[in-house]
Amino acid sequence: MRLTQFTDFALRLLIDLARETPGKRTTIAEASRRLDIPINHLTKIAHRLAKANLLKTSRGRSGGLALSRPAESITVGQVVRVTEPDFALVGCMAGQDCSLAPGCGLAPVLDTALMTFLRVTDQATLADIAHSPQRTGTADSLDPFGEKNPCG
Image (cartoon, rainbow, N blue to C red; front, side, top):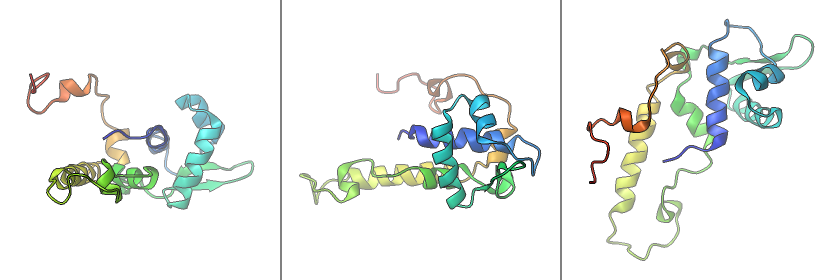
């Protein structure tokens, strides 16, 4: 599964805000500079996150963005569910016809994989990520099987 750039930017924004002093507001312009994300994108992201009650927004001289609740109570899974438009990994999961139906067992396997992904992301909070030491390496270096390519 690959997350959209929208979700990537939303997570970056929320993690950045989680690193701030609680209650401190950050303007979209400040966040844009720090995160190197265009203001237009951040505006759309902030709007979506505010509608989902993950962000508080206010206008005016002392306005800006802040988390709507403590970073310890916002999970990565919650953010992903708000920002990802579609979790259908294959067409039949989105209700499209499948030439292999009804005997195909792929959709249940992918559905289990998706549920596992969401369960793991539900365990990680913004606080966990914002205050953890930076991890270096690639997904290959984090392979739980200890192999670079288990398929050969």
